Length: 70
Image 1: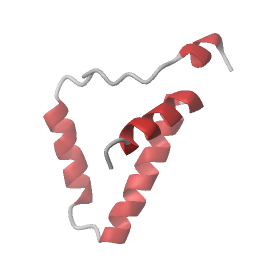
Image 2: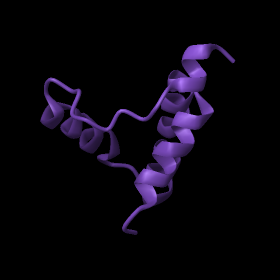
Image 3: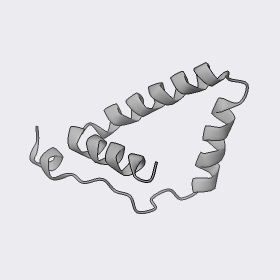
């Protein structure tokens, strides 16, 4: 593990130039999927993004943040 990975923290401030466009991409990706396919899609997407992040601590922090209020 690199020094950068050990000090990385979840970035939750707005970072997308066009968040509404990304939201629409996500909505469109689920169009015509069954509930089971939609769930599988979400699982695959989360794993791809977690791999892209590449820092287990940041991913764990994101999981905790996403679960708050549910």
